[in-house]
Length: 224
Length: 389
Ligand SMILES: Nc1ncnc2c1ncn2[C@@H]1O[C@H](COP(=O)(O)OP(=O)(O)OP(=O)(O)O)[C@@H](O)[C@H]1O
Ligand SMILES: [Mg+2]
Image 1: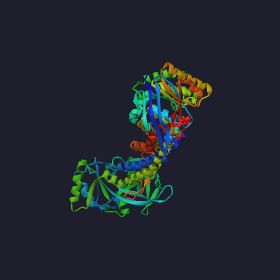
Image 2: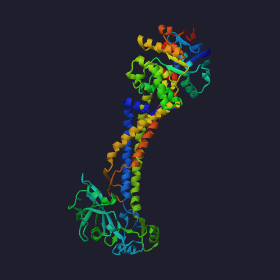
Image 3: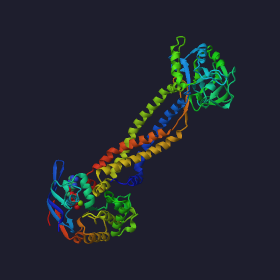
Image 4: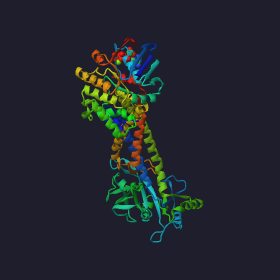
């Protein structure tokens, strides 16, 4: 199977007050299509940084990041934005739903960037909400939902445009054990039944267990 | 594609406390702006309605106002027989010789001496000017020390009520009528009999002006040229309406300059207020901006979203300002700064163009104040924005 994520010799260096901070130091990572990978490592080891590079919201200092066949660094700012809206689904630790939009409107957001009619947008968003089991909450605002429900709405938003890759940065980090369990089950389903390739950063060993593969980052280097 | 407008509106509703600062600031500025415009509009309307387009007014050549103009009755009579002047039903020319003086009368509220224009007219004046109407009482009787007073000045000066009398040049004048004149500056005058007032005010044998109705208004230019070419006379003719409008010019202009100056100074403050508000709004929504960008919204759509939000905020302020200014419509005030040095009462006129200007001014303040914050929002690196708590 082809590699959906292909990271080759990537370095990421930040310059802070004439000080060079090497966050990623020669990372090579291959994620085959349909894989569910957990990225682990101590705080500050560069997990989020690596995930951001894969998701196309950051650019490497050197090396190459190819996702779904596209060399991310070659795209212009606006082309990259369009590419993200079609290719990558984002799941955040704190859900990042827009508070003034309802669940349905939140889920519809990525579809505003696609050439769809109002009706199609609405139907697709409802389908996505049905997949995460929250169709009956479509008119609710984020503050009217529990943390676990919010994260499920966020997952519906991540899958609504049918992207190839889902990136999740500590998706269960802010949830109680039961909600975390539900979210992980949902992600497994997305991976198994909907063939989504998932890269998930997590601190939680139990969460990492649910993935097919575990990678460890330490001081900017992949260890396993 | 841009974010839906509802997104901006709802965000402002949720953050109304922050928004209030900008709305209030802009609202206040727009109110002051519209009120000043309404003042200028009212003044212009009052003086623009003074006099008719079909009338000509003859004054001494080079005199700045009727007060400083003077020519003899013989000259006036000679002009009046010109065939270009329309005739009344009695076959006599529609020509109104008038004398004008300024009297010092006590203000109704504080008794302060106030300049009031007193005009001596013949009964012809009511024919030459079509818009003079007696609202209360009757016209003055020729030969008697009687006057009729304009509606506006009656409300502002002591002793101008129907039946009471005023003293001008050591003579008592009884008020027998109140007249209207379409809100024009004539409503700020007191009119009496030409033949009584002439000798009383030491203007016997002469007059300040001669207002005539032209048979064809297009002949005015030729008429004026003939008058100016006549070596026997020292007079010139103007269109009556233009003549009075020109007297208003400097005042209306200085009001507009005042409106511009005050509004710009206050507007700068309001722009900074709006900017502050928008920076606070952007700061509070940094992570949200990062999220939207990650989802694929372009920098431009973020810039646009915050500009729209700022513009909308300002527009709400503009509407508030217009609503606050509107009660001033019809409010009557006076200014003593005209060329004739008389008090002219006029009503504030909040005209639709004034309101539109107020809203556009608000919009401009909103866009200006929103520009930098919106730019900041659109330029945040996504990874940094997402890191925000
Ligand atoms: N914009 C930046 N400028 C400077 N340094 C940065 C920037 N972004 C990240 N860093 C640094 O890079 C390092 C790695 O950060 P990163 O967020 O990738 O770690 P992480 O493994 O996700 O940590 P955590 O588990 O706490 O989320 C940290 O030391 C961080 O301070
Ligand atoms: Mg992290």
